[in-house]
Length: 272
Length: 326
Ligand SMILES: Nc1ncnc2c1ncn2[C@@H]1O[C@H](COP(=O)(O)OP(=O)(O)OP(=O)(O)O)[C@@H](O)[C@H]1O
Ligand SMILES: [Mg+2]
Image 1 (spheres, rainbow over the protein chains, first blue to last red):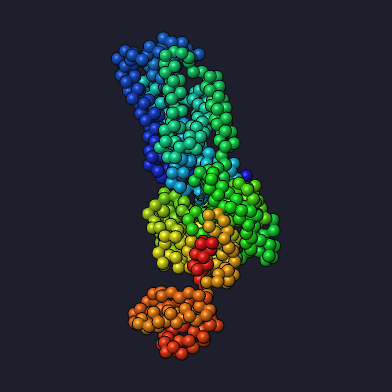
Image 2 (image 1 turned 90 degrees about the horizontal axis):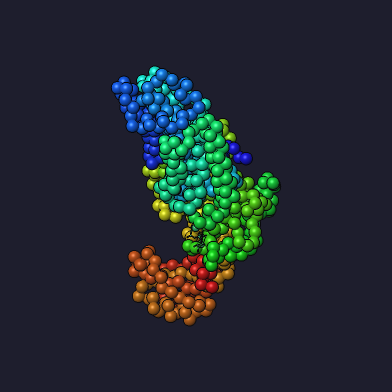
């Protein structure tokens, strides 16, 4: 493997993507809104409710079966405080995966479809790389920012989440095993999946926007998980999260295998 | 691999054997057989759609042939494209530069991609920026560059790893005369340094001026190949003499010379110097240098005043258009 070329191509993709407003903006905004904005907002409301000893409407989720050990651990807290901790640790957890998913998808849309749109691909096609090396370089160039945005979001969330649970219930709750699994096992898999889907989409469409939109559709199942959980269909547990990560890696692996078996610069150039 | 051998022996660097590429009904390159040797500047001449770009792509293994075969550095482009591409530099038809990178970053990334040793990268990038007169704009984004600057940067990128074999796909199209002259000088310098150059062009003067050998292509087919002399010898009509007479004498001169063998054809053409001085230029075909005394003698016997008699080499233009008509 020509690692020097692979690394150079990947770094180039990250650099130019970060210089593009359509890429950099969501990369900065989505973590801020999801990992800071939402917990602070919900925390302020819950804090007020806790002081007034009333439970906000959504706290009826507490009547559902709780994750094992939850009740014992947080005995003595009122409903508003319990509700907020549940929200921070469990209910909101699937939404975290939007970060790595979205970040890798937007960078991949730029570095695959965008490169096609700007007609800069030809220079890379002539590089001294094999088809496999070129594909791997492009994948790496989208996966690394996806994984990094995920980890940064995780760090932010631990900070803000703890500050807010302290404010609401005088407890430090993060990170627990579930969140560590999410950040280091499921998140990187989500980044891989988001970019894998975008890579496949990019081979069918011609513009950055189209590729990004199709790639972003992959977020929808996550929203279903959140809703399902809120409706009490299931409760997230460490085992379930670990399994979910495994499934994501499996699907991502399949998508990459498909991409690797179809990615040929010769057929790419025949279409240029 | 025998790169040192190939350089000094007559072993061809590029060899194709009935190389063919079809896109549906269009045969972009049709049974092309050529061989190109180390140190040659090889002109690949043809109109739009002649198959020039497709040939460059085939030779670098970025598209696959539908029939026939090619060898570059004795390697098969389809199987070993990456090893060939490590030793070739390709200036593509469109510069394919990312507008968001600076000139310096562009060269730096491609230096890495082409495996230029770390300790040489900086020097090499600076040298190329300097050489292509881009130093003062090195840290500006390519998005703001003029067409000429982009082309110079693309050429710098092509040369970043000092490739042995350089493909230039219409390097001067759309540039102003000064930029064209600079690029021609660059090509001459590369030639002096022993680099092999595959120059695609539809500019006859460029091919005539720079190339050791020229292949004339039309619709994917090779029409002729050789140096200018060899190509022109294929033309009967190619040799000619231009003469200058008084404008008033033109009809008489025309009649006179048409009766003088071996002139086969005479044509009044405009010549600025002649026109400005009340003269007229006549081009006589079928005659060459050794017919000059006879032309002068005929004119003197008839009392026709000649102001200039000049034998002309057939130009590539003659060859080119004659071949296209075949
Ligand atoms: N990817 C492709 N798909 C379909 N047809 C193609 C493709 N590439 C080239 N062709 C066709 O093959 C023929 C030769 O094209 P090519 O680009 O090689 O010509 P060229 O000599 O480089 O022309 P130009 O001077 O316009 O650059 C043309 O008729 C072109 O339309
Ligand atoms: Mg072309």
